[in-house]
Amino acid sequence: MQSGKKSLLFSFNTFLRLDDMTDKKVTMRVFGMTCDDCIRTVSDGLKKEGAEVLSISLNDGMAIVKIDDAKISAEKLVKAPVFGEKSHYKAQLRKVE
Amino acid sequence: MAHEYDLVIIGRGAAAFSAAIRASEITSNQAAIAMIGFGPIGGTCVNVGCVPSKYIIEASKVANIQRNPRYPGIKPSDPAVAFDKLMESLRGVVEEERKSKYEDVLKFYPNITMYEGKASFISRDTVKVISKLGEEDIKGYNFIIATGSSPMIPKIEGLEDTGYLTSDNVWSLNDLPGEIGILGGGFVGLEIGQALHRLGSSVRIIKKHDTIARGIEREVGIELIRALENDGISFLIERDIEKVYQRGNKKIISTRYKGKREEIEVDEILIASGRKPNLAGLSLENASVQYSDNGIKVNDDFSTGNPSIYAAGDVVDQRYRLETLAAREGAIIASNIFQHSSKGVNLQEVPWAIFTEPQLASVGYTEDEYNRNFGKAVSRVLPLNTVPKARILREDIGMFKIVADENTGKIVGVHVLAPYAAEFIIEGVIAIKSGYTYHDIIDNSHIFPTVAEGIKLTSQSFTRDMTKMSCCVE
Image (cartoon, rainbow over all chains, first blue to last red; front, top):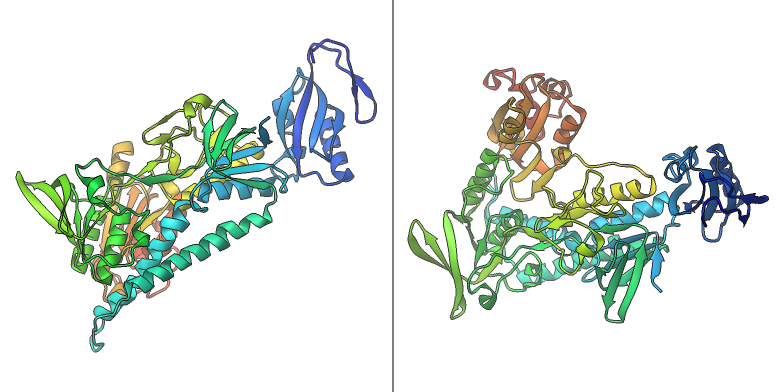
């Protein structure tokens, strides 16, 4: 997806737009999720870093979020405390658009 | 379309299994892992390395004690060695260990898929696997190359035609060779050589230099040669091997010694000239991974020129080729990948051992290395026979050497030739890793009488005259 191009994506709770030039859509593989509580914990952890959660799937462990690249990079997001050494969850980047 | 995996591991030995298990633990068994390899599962250590060699070494000790009981009043006798039975049991133990520690372990990790075949990079993130079933492409988000190493075979005229043994195939022997010539003085040659000698072979080790190998504390290496010679093994040094050939049932090793030709007649030749990394067929250039004949070049965190490809174990261009080091590196890489760590291994804190009798165990710098790098080493050497337990064991040949920084007194190297040295070198590892001085070693009580007490006695010798000390002086 081109940054700056207005698009609608299916979101975690609502519909979101990638409006800004610094907005990025980040796809990451999240390991360790087994239930809805896990999704909530990971989602909260991502939101704390300023990401907007577009979708998280238990089926394939994929999370798609929107970030403002000027505030937090995708590389830093996968090292957020929710994915830290003591956390049950780990994340790896798969795609940044 | 290529199969996709979170982690693709090329190899299936100690480094590969350690990486796969650690990655599985970190990701709650959710990382999809492909492990690609060929040959017996488990790699060198369990199949043709530590496990069979330690088995035959321990068996040969039993034969040796029967032939040479250490204590007066115990009558010596020649052991009746049924070599074929011993080797059959050795192969059984290898099979058992391989099954219990590798094959059976896999069932706990449904996220690991085994591929039987040879992997070759076709791009920066994809390998082609060629197997009996055909070819398939496997894409990985992360890779670990852990293909191990193989015996280095020197280029000697006639060697291929004459035939030879290596540490890969010596385990299939059923008949004990009457006379065996070992080319090179590598660790494997010394261990297998002493074992076969004690079981009844006549063993000659033919080599160029009078030391064991580079990187070993020289005086400790020379003492080991003295111990092995005392055991009955011949060291033929300063020999340049010109060619080998078959004459009747015998194999002839033709050497040049002090300008003259010298022929050595043996029943079998064992090659013990070190190991080389298994790089053939990987097509690393397609993945931007740099390498040389010494192995894959890695950064401190074991990543390669391609940041999503790591390398672990014997295939890495590094000082040591050890099973424990390979396993440690595999686990560290899994953490570096999935926990975004950037850990490495300080090789100065990694111990190694030669399981001869006496054992040589070592960790850290040799005195020469430390002087070359830092220019301020101080050392003490304690002969083994000054340690009471060694005298009780009636073991005479051996020594302890501790190298310390001259200014700080911090231990930087511990080198031991003694019974059980491999069991207690860990004290040296902890000392070096923790930055202990020889005073710190002395401050810890050591059990009397033990051979390990030699570490404390050697530490005391930095500040005291040990000939004036009674037993257990603190």
